[in-house]
Length: 75
Image 1 (cartoon, rainbow, N blue to C red):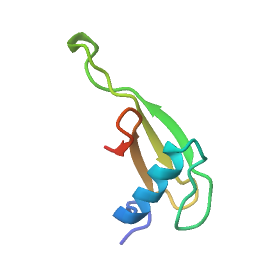
Image 2: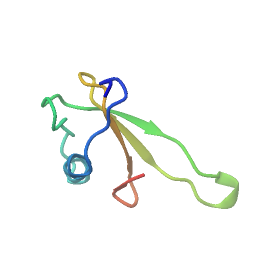
Image 3: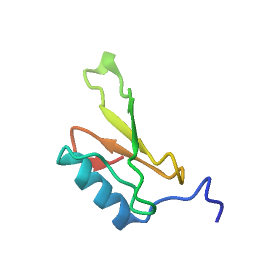
């Protein structure tokens, strides 16, 4: 598999989400690098809801996971 498009395993994503939900910096389980956080807008403001999501990206291996802030889950 190409590392540029590789994904985390479900257990790895769970660990990242748990770290981030506790307010700790997310750390890549593959290489130990602190992950970069980018906010993502979404949803429809006109319909009365808007998701707050964070995109957690490993700057080293380029794997990432999207975190739904309100639900505390991967999206």
